Image (cartoon, rainbow, N blue to C red; front, side):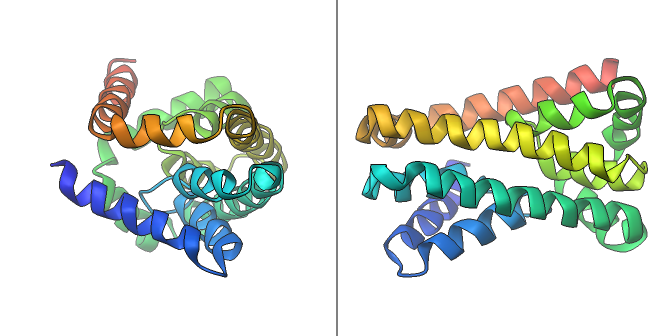
Length: 195
């Protein structure tokens, strides 16, 4: 079960040694916010560990890519829900919960995006839903900027202060962290389903 995820994780990490690594980081953050499964945190950690003094600049690149990718996800939901949006929902098996997210938007509006942007909740589904449910694009952008920025700058701060211990921790406990992530994700889906 973990082998394909580990391979994808290692492929993303391989970009850390490429001369266009900051561009790869931006593109990874962009695509993860609209359809790609691997979060940009993995590459951000690897790059920031290489030169800890650049951690905050890399967090800025990641935030910019993620917010712009979130806007792409918003555009998919707003204008292409019947085609591209449905395909993404099919890939992640998220049809049953998608309509329940609408109630989250109606009740919590900007906070739904803020929570999804900062936590391991699938941000891409929330970006697409924001467009499909016609959330105000400026409020969406602000919530994305604050939550994604907080997430990536917190990670940059941790790397700047704790260095290689963070990467060693991820490598040592990759399977357990993946399992924890899946449990948290399933727990979120259960909460949405019963709510």
